[in-house]
Image (cartoon, rainbow, N blue to C red; front, side, top):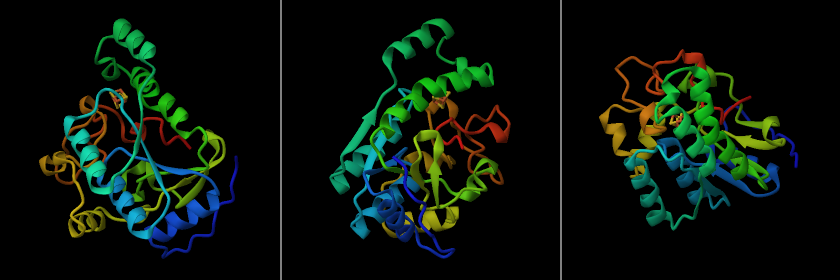
Amino acid sequence: MSANIPEITANATPAEILRAGIEAAGGPVSLACSFSLEDVAIINIAHEAGLSLGVFALDTGRLNEETYEVADALVERYHLHIDWFFPRHEEVERLERAEGLFSFRESLDKRHACCHIRKVEPLSRALTGLAGWVTGMRREQSVTRSDLKAVELDSLNGGILKINPLIDWSEEQLTSYTDEHRLPKNRLYSQGYRSIGCAPCTRAVQPGEDARAGRWWWENPENKECGLHRR
Ligand code: SF4
């Protein structure tokens, strides 16, 4: 399946980007939801705009309890159906028996191996049959995201559309939107977390650090992606 990239004007709102992306995809589109402020905002934007957007989530087996609480709050508020995807249990068993529970801290290769089993492979199943997927990525989040496009062709995932409606939002805009709409919010944000992934690979950040400094903090900034957003 392959779609055309729609024209997106420089001042397009997230709802306009989302609508243009969904229409251009011409088939089912789902949000890859990690229950971040960004993802919750997108769910609310789609809901208010009456857009048809599925939601899937990857349960890596290493998520924080606080993340599941957000998922539960979203189900309650929007009567949301979340398609959960888990890693292949044989692969997790093989990894943990051979390498232990924290092998991802030993080397970049081992970290990528864990992310591949727990995130990348389940993502490929989650994207099967979709015409497009939506992410909460924003340009200002890190050096790895500065050249994002609002809608891109995801050639590594079958040429479907990848839609990034919050691409130009600042963290301040996102926080204001969240507060204004009283959206469910992961309690870890109030403890200094600014980007939340798996529990053992995420921590609070210090003032002045970028939003993703608390992800895989033992690695170089240019490595701070989990493979979900390869380009
Ligand atoms: Fe494994 Fe950490 Fe990647 Fe989660 S973020 S899949 S625990 S390496």
